Image (cartoon, rainbow, N blue to C red; front, side, top):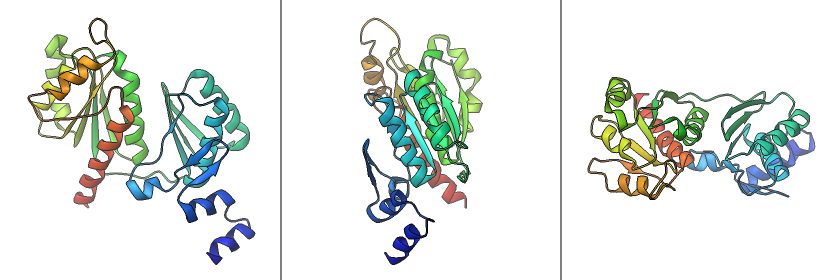
Length: 252
């Protein structure tokens, strides 16, 4: 405790950093940020931008950078991203911003990127499934895993899937995102010996076009796979990261 107080007094530790050390979270005008989640759970808190104002998103991102060295944000609109970029130009001018559709990762200049000796394969049924896969990929890349991404291999033309089979088999864990009837994860899971995480996507049209048909299909899979919620790319990426961490630890 005394060391923390002395560090705040001499300026080597900010009040937010000290609060994160003491409580595990930081309280700001935009809400509470769980700065200790990465150490406690192995997965950082992501800032879910949907439903938040641009100011709230920017404030939480700044808090995340100050306390953990990076910020992971999901479901950002273009206007939220523009506001975030403008805010960081002043607040953290040397920060690095990486963007994948609606997912953004920001790192402070002194942030040390971790590395995992594990590969996460990510496959999509079609291009429309890309933003959900982007969200999953961002989580895995943040953890330091190698990501091998292959898109548009849906079962409407099974040859597209089989053409990539050897590549899929090389991954330590697979995330497979698909809409419509959600058949791709079931097919892939029947052909590989690695864990498969299925992500139903709210793409397509017609009956249950909001992703429910894909979710039902994956839950009813006759091959063994795990299934996350509709469009839950972050959850899939988090699950894959935990598996990748275990594999990397075993290799060490």
